[in-house]
Amino acid sequence: MNILITGGAGFIGSHLCKTFLEKGESVTCVDNFITGSKDNIKDLLNNKNIRLIEHDILTPLYINDSIDWVLHFASLASPKDYIAYPIKTLKSGLLGTHNCLGLAKAKNAKFFFASTSEVYGDPLVHPQVEEYWGNVNSIGVRSCYDESKRGGEALAYAYYRQHSIDIRIVRIFNTYGPNMQIEDGRVVSNFIVQALKGEDLTIYGRGNQTRSFCYISDLVAGLLKIMSIDYKLPLNLGNSCEFTVKELAKSVLKLTKSKSKIKFLPLPEDDPKKRKPDITKAKKMLNWQPKISLEEGLKKTIGYFREKLG
Image (cartoon, rainbow, N blue to C red; front, side, top):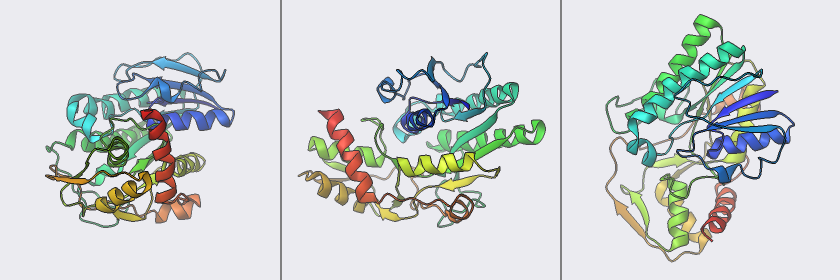
């Protein structure tokens, strides 16, 4: 297959590029490197089946070759980035998605939209099922990301209904692993980097808010499985094991053998108090569930960041 991946040099995108190349597929990696990194794909560029296009998907992309899949993973997905670039975040989820759907339509390709658990906002339903419409502050500081993904889902469905585009939508819950940015601003990378540097681990609020953490290889396995079936409704992918942020911090300190302390800071606006996916549908339809424990995944991720920090 010929597979085009926007955000292909980003965290999840780079792992997808590698996986498809290992399967013998042809990959077109599209990235503007605002948050993606060439380091994430440098070992892949010697493969004859990959080409890199440096391009901002906010501008329409024209490809001469045939394309079987357009996977839209380009996004400013960490709070640090999307709060700093709210307009670009909204555009990547709306205008970028529109351009990617246009490309899929022109090439008669299937379209995959990387949505997010953030479409549920600060949820009033726990765990979050796909039928839940969410509790999102449409004008809050996080709305640029939340609404960009909600709007992206709506665009995908509009193209499906009006143009019969074959779509897949996955709502991705907290995922971590190698190829995350050092200055990512997400909780796992934040804690690991702070612990390795001997800095205080910064917890927002009292650390009682919960998250579930899915290791990248588990997520990628789920993404590939949904591409292999005909299912067009949104699907949750993530780990259903729930931990408090304080528990995560203590695990990182233990595994890094760090002497760092925990520092508590004010809780940001609209920060979700609970976040856990209901993955009943994924288990049933994909015969998929995460295999990597939090401890095992953290050890792998700590090793990656230890090497990156030198």
